Image: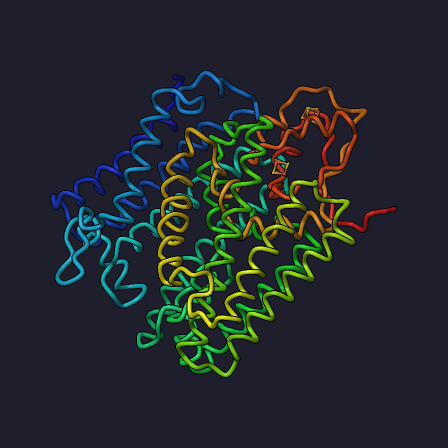
Length: 488
Ligand code: SF4
Ligand code: SF4
């Protein structure tokens, strides 16, 4: 390993900062100054190392030993890193007391170490989620600088990375904390700005709906803004720009994958088998969250004796599924494969049958399973185990977009919109392609971009997050991300 002075300085700073955190975890160190010093050291360490790594040479992908370095080719280092990340997520989700969280008394360890920053931002002591959010933001900022240095020849990559860094820092981290400080008596809705179902899968849960309905003007704004995002703003943005407006410009999960996960993007499986698993898995998660949400809203309407008649709500769901299936049958059929169309018809038919039976017999639990049980299953298997533990813990083994590719229901919905309605596509100038394969190698979503380029075919794939890295690493300028009207 060739380490010049800036890389050695960067590594020393980064590991020094992490050592301070480890010492705090075991209650060996404390104090606000040390907290800020450790966070600055980690951030500075990543930035200084990246300057050493990228500024002395031309920008872009070099394939420099990417398949020979242990960390980037599923070697021992990658497995150790994957194990550490996975263990960290398991502790965060299910054993936060090991980090020092004390719900009934005074925090200790790492959580107590973050108290000063937490008090400064939101007026309360830290939780494990505050620790996690802070480190997550530091990672996106630090590795965001690394990404910009690496792809500095591409304005698209520079602006896109600045965008994810901004959204993580301002909208996902600072603003919710400030809102929590300004509204200490309001429930959680006022502190969470990623207010879009199904990313925010508890958007329609009873406690969240009640909190918004009882939260005055701010609550009503969040309710209507959230609904507007789902049915209006998001489809319009996806129509014009593709799902990239969210998946690779705004989303925190995508932000981490693009920055901290960049070293692992080549690990995404490009096989047809992986593609088949991807399609079934991600749409099963979407189905799961849809069913859970219908059940939860129905229970809410019954239990709260709300103005909307629960049966009318079920009729609305059946109508929605009917219109969607009809659209696929009449118009969208050209763009979806037969198995996908069959899956939509079957799922819509079975769900509608359940709802009709339910209306006939007046069951409280619309799918014959308690809606709270369904909700807790979703929260455990998808919200925690898949999106957190597997989604990030497995970066060094399965690539950086495991969650976005195989599990995120938001990505599935935006993918439908992208495939069926959007102007976005990647155009290819096939005659210039030299079949080097850089584009396919570095596509984090496992798309075989080269196959399209060789045929000179436009790429319109529901899974494409529009990161543009395929285009940035192409030595021949074959690939172009476009939103303009499609000429027929
Ligand atoms: S096809 Fe290109 S733009 Fe789309 S996800 Fe893959 S690398 Fe990113
Ligand atoms: S499109 Fe560009 S990166 Fe992809 S195989 Fe062809 S020349 Fe290589």
